[in-house]
Image (cartoon, rainbow, N blue to C red; front, side, top):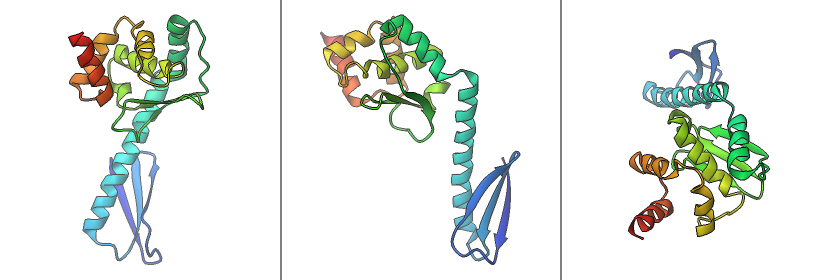
Length: 175
């Protein structure tokens, strides 16, 4: 990513950035140290790269379309989802469902995984609209997806599986 830094004597505290075509234009105070500026610019680069990735994932295939197909196939179109989106600020979880607002957020990292893993994550979050916890009833809904076990193994191997889900995998394997 090309970076252009513009130092200004009129700027006193803030450092800002925006993309102009394929160039990251950073505006900074004249007096800011190069070390501090380098750190801030790295943060901006990561932020803008993630934003581009999210836009690319959204263009590739709409999560809304995928969820509609999964809703039809696994939930008989019983689910009403108000919003679903990829997010770039969700690094410790692969998905999150707010069942009261009927919204689902999916980590951009899931968008880079195989489609069958992405579908598992979506079904997992969709199941939370019916069962907000990880009860037996919840897991029976999720297990309708024929690649659920394989996808959970993939996520476990990638270090993406949450602790309570790892316990569930372990107890299912033992029992």
